[in-house]
Length: 219
Image (cartoon, rainbow, N blue to C red):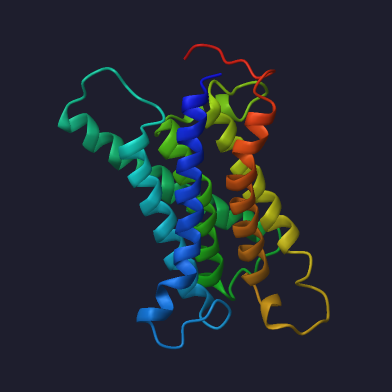
């Protein structure tokens, strides 16, 4: 295992965690009455934007999936366009999945869709950041023994953390506690965020701890 690449990945994870922290700290400086619970949809927009912006910056600086072939401006535009399409489709897919798992159909549509955007920023934007708009690579990474580098393993861990966090976050909603954070989709989005951050923090530690038994095939 290339420990230099592991260190680069750890730095990238640190900046991704910082994006979530800044989404909580910066908006109150510019928006009146901003709060995580009171203006939750606004926070979903801000957090998604921060996470996506940091992923784009990390893509340009760390280049986790470098290509040694020269690409034309047209191919870069095509790749960017495909990435935008992939991201939008993933938002629709997550929205449909949330509905199938019990999200309101006609009520709270903006909240549900923005929660879908948040999940896409945690999962899909990282897939695009690490693998690009290559659906076959996505299938390969999430199949058994499909990881080819530390970045692939980090993608698996953060994706699992986000999904499990959102799932566990749904448990308190039907309980008769009458807490403000039980309103849809606050507990789910907070759970997904905590799972995402946990994956970012503990992913590099897990990879480092298991580095002796992790072997990667050539790309």
